[in-house]
Image 1 (cartoon, rainbow, N blue to C red):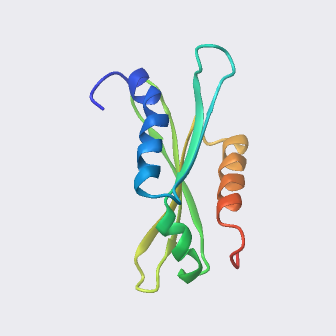
Image 2: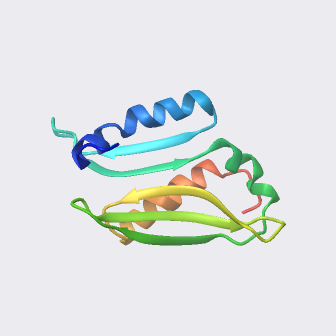
Length: 120
């Protein structure tokens, strides 16, 4: 994606749809404004293998965020755990406008909805 930031955000839906073709258990959610220009608000995604191996990981979940730089600032939220070999195992990701209570609630609700049924 070497074009503009606007073009990159417009391609998210088609990119995630292509990933789902390779990984049928891939989950994503993109939220935009309801007006006709469809401005990006936030998104969430997690891959199928992470969902399947979640129950084998250590019972510690770490959620962290890092600031995105560039014209469109935001926050990349990640949920990670530790595998039995003491390696970092990324579980889920979200891009939000900032690290606020509303964006963290969205991330945790999406995470809980996709990783339910496990001993959490």
